[in-house]
Structures are given as structure tokens and as C-alpha cells.
Image (cartoon, rainbow, N blue to C red):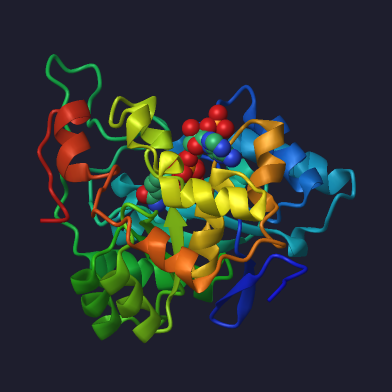
Length: 329
Ligand SMILES: NC(=O)c1ccc[n+]([C@@H]2O[C@H](COP(=O)([O-])OP(=O)(O)OC[C@H]3O[C@@H](n4cnc5c(N)ncnc54)[C@H](OP(=O)(O)O)[C@@H]3O)[C@@H](O)[C@H]2O)c1
């Protein structure tokens, strides 16, 4: 079996490129150039968020690429995310418009609820993006939770589709129970579930649940631990790239270990959104089309699962934001 083009994921009838560029933790100084180089290299899917604090600069990179004729707006799939402080119905549209304004766009291809966590509202003029602390200048800064039902937030997300601001809407970091609940009241069903997934966190049951509802899945942190070393939430030895079965598949196919792990993600039907600001890796992470893993390789890599979650609010909210707030158990 060979493939000549990178497969696309069907997102309620629209084709989303299965490999996108993740934009978390790319610096404001470099991200415009990275986005431009990524589009020049063939990326057509960008994963942005208000919380990444770089949407203005992402927008500059997109604008330059469009002005230089690298592609048309309609060729791009651009995702952004609603931050936790904007869950109340009266704040959702303004938050979406703020991302659109920063990105220099008049619609998003996909707008996602970033976390099933509602935090107290912070006005744009007070702090943007507000991130996790309610008042970072307090003696003991903490998160301040808000009591907003997720159904309220979803109703306002649906209005974004009706108003043409977002073509599709979806959720991140939802469990199967939250998806079941959402499906019980959604007038416009979620098109996408974005979750952490890599060979150490395969999330088989959650994937089956999403597929059962015809919801596409995007795997974030598809390379596993690597993103979390700089945050002191993982050590280099936690990397899945050193696993013998990954290395053996990489040798067999004459590709890198990262390409094997990303291809595993795509071949099991998820989109992947690896982040890098290194030009060589931009090309490497996109070049998965000629690579096909055998059934045995797929099974061996899936068997690496150890339910190892690196992005867990139940841990990082307490460690980094002085507030215990568990969402997974
Ligand atoms: N919805 C959510 O809650 C959520 C949470 C987390 C992430 N995300 C999204 O998912 C995207 C991807 O996740 P992530 O950034 O956490 O992790 P990731 O993409 O799995 O890993 C990024 C790390 O891997 C390194 N890397 C990239 N390509 C490589 C390669 N070919 N070989 C070796 N190392 C490589 C990068 O370093 P260099 O940059 O130095 O190359 C960086 O340290 C994010 O950027 C963001 O858009 C969403």
C-alpha cells in the first residue's frame, strides 16, 4: 500500500489536512516566520489558541503567506480555541472575534472549547490573554473558578457557526462522559475532539466513543513527553522516540523515529499537530505520505500504551497555579 498525498481527515464533510502545525510555545519573536515557512513547506493546517499568546504574530505570518501568493485563504484550515475565562454566553462571541482580529481572519475553520474548565471572567483591557491566574499580582495568586454549565458555553459556540464566524466547532480535553452529555443537548454537534494522544496514551475507548458519534479526533502532543521537558513535567527519558519498536520501524522505513510516531497517529485515523520551530523538522513532520506502517508495527506501537498523561490539569493547576482542579478523576 502506498500513498502519494498526505491523507485528510473528514470533519463533517470538510477535508482537514491530517498533519497540522501546533503553535503552543512558539515565541512571539519567531512565530510569524515559522508560520510563513510552514505554509511555504506545504502546511495548510494551523493549530492556534488565544492562550498561546502569539495569535497576532501568527496572523502576520498568514498575511505574508497570502500576500506572497503561497496559497489562498480557502486552502488553509485554521483552528483557534476559546479560553477558560470566556465560557459565559455573553463572552464567547467577543473572544472568538478577538482571535479573528488578531489572526487577521474573518472566519475560523474550527473553534474549540479549550478546556472543560470555566474561570472567572477577565476583561480584555485588564489582561489578554489572561491565562490561569485570576490576579497574578496577588500575594498568593490562584485560579478563580466560575460556575458556568458547559451547555451554556456550547449554546454560544453554536451561535458562532450560525453567525459565520466559525465553520465548525468542537471541544478539547473532554472525557467520554462529557461527550455523551454534550451529544444529549447539542443542536450543532461537535465536529472535533482534540485530546492528548501518543503511543504512551492511546485513548482507545475515547477514540471509539468519538468515532461512534462521527466526531473527528485530533491528537495533541502527538510526540508525547518532548513538549513537557521544558515545563519540568517530563524528563528526556520519558520520550517514546527511544522505544525499540519505534526505532526498528524507523530503520525499516528509513525515516526518523518522530515520523514513525506521527504516522502511527495518522494511520489510526487521528489528525496530528506537531509543534516545531526548526525548519528541518517542519519538513520532516509533514513528510509522512510515503510512509506506511505494517499492521504488526501499528500493533506494537499501540501496545506501548501506559496511560501516561503529560497534560493533566489535576497536576499542573496545583503545581503551577496553586489550585487543585482535577478533570480526569
Ligand atoms: N487543546 C489542548 O489543550 C492542547 C494542549 C497541548 C497542545 N495542544 C496543541 O498541540 C500542539 C502539539 O503539541 P505539543 O506542542 O504539546 O507537543 P508535540 O508537538 O508533540 O511536541 C513538541 C516538541 O517536540 C519537538 N519536536 C518536534 N518535531 C520533532 C522531531 N521531528 N524530532 C524530534 N523532536 C521534535 C519540539 O521541539 P522543537 O520545537 O525544538 O522542534 C517540541 O519540543 C501544540 O503546539 C498545540 O497547538 C493543544
